[in-house]
Amino acid sequence: MASHFQLLGRDPSTSARRGRLATLHGAVETPAFMPVGTQGTVKALTPVHLRDIGAQIILGNTYHLSLRPGSRLIRELGGLHAFMGWDGPILTDSGGFQVFSLAKLRDIRDDGVAFQSHLDGARLFLGPKEVMGIQADLGSDIAMVLDECPPWPVARDACAQACRRTLDWARRCREIAAGNGFLASGRHVFAIAQGSTYDDLRREAAEALSALDFSGYAIGGVSVGEAEPEMLKQVAATAPHLPADKPRYVMGVGTPPQLLRMIALGVDMFDCVLPSRVARNGLAFTPAGPINLRNEKFRADPGPVVEGLDNYTCRNFSRAYLRHLITAGEMLGGTLVTIHNLHFFLDLMGQARAHIEAGDFAAWQKAWIGRYENTV
Image (cartoon, rainbow, N blue to C red; front, side, top):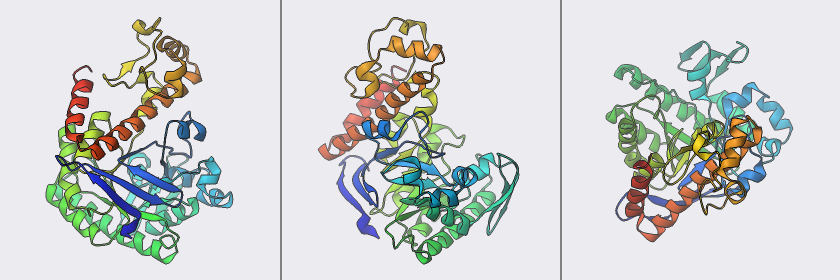
């Protein structure tokens, strides 16, 4: 199982890693950022846009796709890749977080979660069997196990129980994936280490899951309300106890400086809705911090969002034009700023990979974060 991930370099001053993850639909160069395509689409963009900005892998969601349009329909239509017209790798989240955050009513049991759909109130159930079956229908390159994501703050006993359930579900998910041919087909299953703010529970979860030999490991339950220093502390408490020869993935984060700080802690993969979500309101990322294109000062600004950044938006359109589109409520505004923002994140990962290879990641990271945060 270890041969699917190659470590190609390490930064001498941090725990940053340069790697390559092999999947059925192509290799992913790490550190990597995954644009979020929850409902079978990265909002406002086509697969052509995603390829143009260098997206290697995107994320879909088991919970949402199972509710609408349904995983069986997607399977009958050739799987998620064919359904959405994307021929690159796809990672699918198990839906556990959405059950806990969106479901109207839920009953957490040792065999899974009974809940009511946030769409129509239908009574549904997700356990390891259901989660792995849905992801097999979708044809995911990387399937996430079902996990229980504790809220923040959470009492220690409740967190320990969530960690126990998550471990049990992970074990069962792996058994199912091995039994139904999912793993034998060359697809991957990633486990999720929980533990909230309890360092010892984080370490225990990481070590117990590592013994089960998954294809990769995620650090879950971060950025659920806690302050950034606490979030980074949780990642630092978990990453060293995960296998060094497997990819490490922090779920659902974050800002550009957060990503760079987590890369320095040894994290390889990220996803976040931030760059696409804020784009639709006119917030654009730059090396000197984010800018709000709705601001009057950009009304006649002839320059691109970022000079020299090679994406369709920055090559062709001014800040003034983007401001006009956003303030006029034109759909194109959200598309163009989303193209820019996602490319900014993907380009940042490319820069990180290059500096890890060059051996100067630590100095570059410090300077980049300093410039970005001191001008926000």
